[in-house]
Image (cartoon, rainbow, N blue to C red):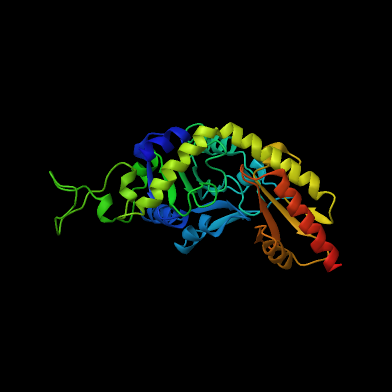
Amino acid sequence: RLRDKLGKMINTPASNICFAHNTSTAFNFIAAALKRSTPFGFNLVSLMDEFPSSHIPFEFQGIPVKFVKPVDGVYSIESILDAVDEKTMGVVCSYVQYSSGFRLDVEKLGKALNEMDLLFMVNATQAFPFYEVDVEKMYVDVLTVSFHKWGLCGVAGSLFYTSEGFREMYPSAMAGWLGIKPPPNDFIPTEKNIDYEQFEHAGQYNFGTMNFQALAGLDVAIDLVNEIGREKIRERIAYLTHYLVDELKALPVEILSPYENEEHRSAIVLINLQHTDNGHAVAFLQKHGIITAIRAGNIRISCNFFNTTEEIDRLVEALSLFSEMET
């Protein structure tokens, strides 16, 4: 039921969805499959600000990854395509960057990569379920979403999507008991010393028993998100981030997230306090009951739909007080 529910949200059948322990696990499946099924040397293209789970699984397998650098926090589609060469097999990147909050035009990039016959592998952890995902319209071959950030349910693992065409070309190079076809009239593959046959559907990535309690929590959380309405949630987040940025402009801070272009905004705003220590500021805010995070040496502020303008006022007042104390 949960796979079907999520499948409808990203426009794919439930048979293309399974759950991985996390994004690193999912991309390790993909990296091993690419390595085993590709006899020639190849590389992938990614983005410089990526979270490590987006690239370490591939680099650890000895797959070269070329990293595109941003300009003022923005990754243009043209700069990503310019990094492609004759050995490039595809692009692996995030829908929304975990640190800066930059939101990529996934549909435009996916269409361009499809025309070039290149793979498109997307980490949508910082985007889904609030920002729209349509794997068909975006020409996505592989998608991962770790739900502990925006899933409202704690650590429930990762949605792991693969297209049918991808699995045909690059079947899983690893297997657990749940990913193997059992004998007739059984659900456990108890046979020994045989040529094991994995499922054609996304269940081939199932290693073994998962945390079903957490997935039950995710099931309820997805119902809540759909009940409220994702468009309403996006509007609320846009309103809060606009309010936050406007209030921050009165402080001695540098706003690092690309906020001028609406299409590049997300729920994340990255700032740098001038003439003081960002790490000390995060600790100061936490003592005042305000949770932010250090990312790339800067302060990441994440606005969820349940936050309020009053909470943002408290944040800005605390930052102002900290800046005065430090100077």
